[in-house]
Image 1: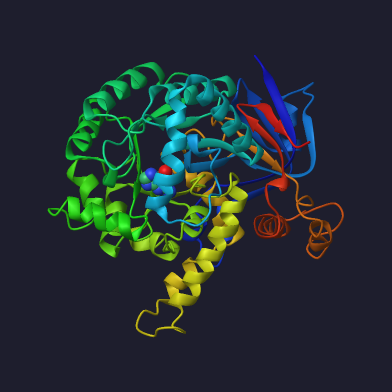
Image 2: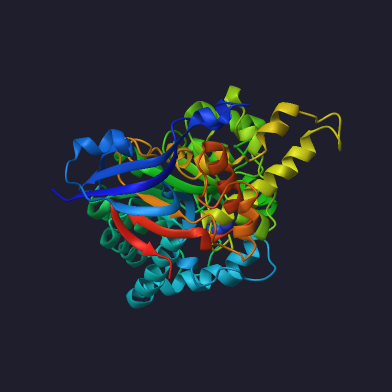
Length: 465
Ligand code: GUN
Ligand code: ZN
């Protein structure tokens, strides 16, 4: 038995704050002096220190003082082989893919190159406090192998798979439907369910897929119904126009994935900026998820995600948040929350009737506002629900896997400590309300410098220098 115990201040969620409009704190749990007991990577006890400690006589916990300990962040949409090209100037999606992304991804067929890039990828992910990613690799099985091997070395819960694309990309970044099917089958066999690895059938996007490639995806899903499906959806206007032109029998983008039986639980589509009300409703009904990637949506000029629509209680859509690095220019989910808040505030203004009385929707306007409760739920328990992994991670419930991050609420830019003095004293936040203030400050004033430690399966893998 390898028992580890952590003593400190904990903040996690037991419910969705969007279900508690006006009393969002009811969805959260704040444990000022808590004890988390971990046996072999699994949480075996959690609660107030003085309630839990007597059951573990002689235990010598690691004390993480002056921090807020949260479940590890979940990045629902990120690209491993774009690690080196994040932050490329001035283009929208399609030319950006052609000029910047595809040439770099082609290099990941080389094992040495892929290994170095993948190692750097995981170092950056962990430094941002992220403990789980759903990731794109490339068409090359080499890149997928390196991804799962690097995750396994760290014992991280990850979702990924070989990328399927057979048109509109240069040679070296595409494969044939037959090759994609064969490579996917081999990778599923080798990695799905080994350690903490989970496999996603990964058609890159509808624009890059011929009907035969989508049929190969459908066959894989039929043969392995427990697999995830990870893709892009309704991101950029030029992309969407191309998809609708190629599929005149489909009324919208989602319809293409529906046609091939891919939409349902464990399906997630990155971006979903231009989804119609009807598409949102169908995603809600089927249990599919959308991944909100605000850094990327702004960086590539793709558009304003309708946060208040996705969270409509009548047709609630499962939702994760993602960096979409390198379309997103940051690795850290803290930065994602910063941009998500601003996108939400734009939605808030656009829907409050001040710009257009006809489109006024005050409830949707309110739901667009990203409070710290909504924000941090979205990158922990909510993100896990979006990916159907909330039975394993997302909060500190007994039986879940022990992935967590220790946030330093006085780190970040030099303004931070003085800023925080407005909200709580020198001993740090002592109530849930004060802790929520600290978390909101981290997402809006701070950055990944506020991530002090990242733990995976009960082992510390990152400590800020
Ligand atoms: N659509 C197809 N491929 C990509 C990609 O790599 N990044 C983004 N943001 N959108 C895509
Ligand atoms: Zn993406």
